[in-house]
View 1 (tube, rainbow, N blue to C red):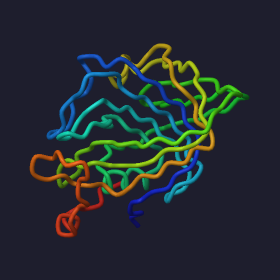
View 2: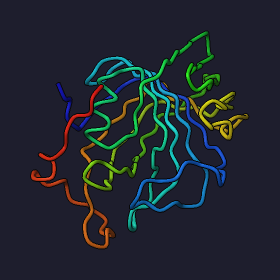
View 3: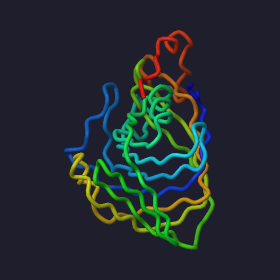
Length: 220
């Protein structure tokens, strides 16, 4: 059964910025690339509309009309429900994978078996509360959409180590990067909005009911 947006999720995460190479995956039709680093996120969700699951995501800077944001070009989860609903609700390119999260003292580590990729970092005791808006730009079955959201928690800066990735052409992520760890994370993902016309208005309208009825839940 589909879990419709909005989604409220809890957990903890590691994230870092990585230089975007010219060989980075292409963006979906209707989105334009922006200069700047890519975003790598490893998440352990302790609560969501589909239960606990792990996630690895890579986002590239992009714009849809006048709206900048992150376009998620790689997203791996270990939950079939999260994969199906993420594709249907927002157009996230979720795929199923074997993910393992390790917590050992202050160490946090996510391993993706099929991609041969490991993301790790150590949290520190000095953490500050924060609240930030987040926006991703995706292409759903009915066209490009804007996905707004909010992220809050207690964060700290840390070095994030990334190793491997050759099996899936993600070796450009490898190295040590400045990043952060978020504890007590709460993420709200709002319903996707579809722009129209020049796609430059600051508030894209919600998807109308008619195109929504054309969407079909993808096979798990």
